[in-house]
Amino acid sequence: MTPQVALEAARMPICITHKPGHMLITDVPEDAEVTMRPSTTAELDEGQAGSMLKMLDMLEDLDDVQDVHTNADISDDIMERLDRAG
Image (cartoon, rainbow, N blue to C red; front, side):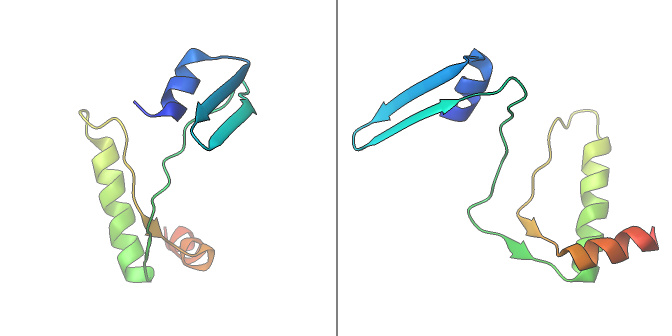
């Protein structure tokens, strides 16, 4: 369990954590959520992005799949073109 998940589960109005050399004090709003962010990303062209998005849709439709994450970096321009193409 990550610290972020623990904080979300605890639903505390304020959180103070400490690690040698580091301190974090933060308010955790009620609507806070944990976001998965990759440490590296893969920039996709239009063809790759279209294929990857179709695969993500197929994975999300499976009953046993709860969450799907990707490190794909798709530009806004490519996403607009894919949205228009349907």
